[in-house]
Image (tube, rainbow, N blue to C red):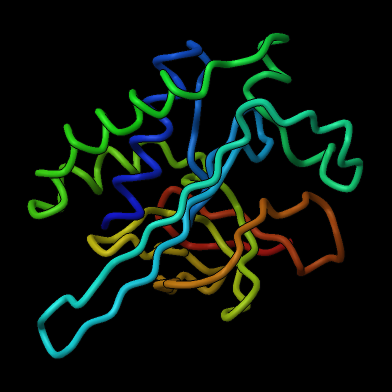
Length: 190
């Protein structure tokens, strides 16, 4: 849940400081206008029920000149690239830490944090493909209490995805390879 908190805090801080609409892409990306703006990674260790440690890493493209990295220019952006001016990093960091502190109590409660995090997930309601760890595709229907992606497959079953990279499914393709989910939750192929 700390990764949820940190990604939510980063989105809120960047939005507050820039008035730009920052969204999240499951499981750990911050996005702006469909381009990656940053990401959150976490590592933890448990001994039985005891949490030994948690490390959370957060990377934000604040003043990155994406034109200097042509291999990512189509898929990534930075706050300064969108705003057309440099962004002061220290005030942004201060705001981010304030957001983490303000939301820390929600980590123990869980549901308030999950709901706020899910509300920013641009992935939800979209047809997606999951790769890396699990190969799957379907409608990103929601997230559970642990942050796992709930994926409605073409056969109507609901999958719980805990690891992987999510991309929007391209439209078109080979007959039988695409489907839509009806209002009853049943997927129909082409």
